[in-house]
Length: 288
Image 1 (cartoon, rainbow, N blue to C red):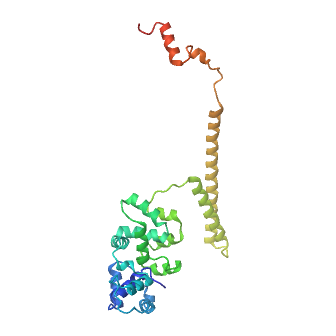
Image 2 (cartoon, rainbow, N blue to C red):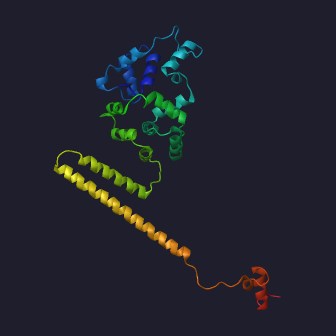
Image 3 (cartoon, rainbow, N blue to C red):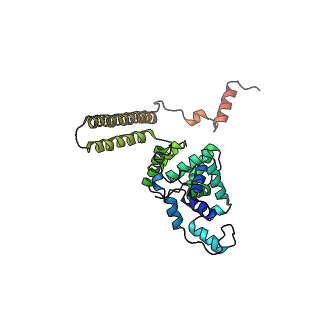
């Protein structure tokens, strides 16, 4: 099983060739990064063995040494040796618990980083960027390296937000927005329809279980009741909408029976203002 911070581990192995496994694991612990699970204790040994041989006169800090720079690019760790704005933002996210918690959830949910950064910045007053989030993912929280089961084994029993993380991996953007407390509109009728759909298919799944034990019977009863209640709620909603539409239709077609006066009566001088003024002069209401 791979590690979500595998590219960062490669950086440590290249940057500090004299470090043993204990020193590398301590560095992970200092940054609050979970180490490989105990049953995968030989992971670091395997990772070191996978690293290609270093070029002659290798110097990862010498930007003019083309062979060294090409080697870093091949390993996917070139940016971490350079103090780019994206890399600095990734370090800042790693060091900030609040931002790190949010960005990790964004990455797990596979939200578009540009859109997510805009929504989060507006809510939190932060300055996250698409490039910074992508760089953080590449080095510290790489979803491309682990399967769904790998994440389960990596996080299980070691992460306080284990269930949320697993839900984000398998859910859609609405789940992510909910956990990130980003406002989103939810249409009531669609929500009830979705609830009914979930209850029905769960009912079908329960029905496939063999036997007629009390737990199965109880589950069927509860789910069937939920389906019926959703149906009643939808029916009530439809009836209420029909009543509103009927009221609107009556309002739209009703009109007074009295025939309105002709325009010549209202404006004998050709316009309303002139007609009103003439009428007042006729009645002696305007001063001389």
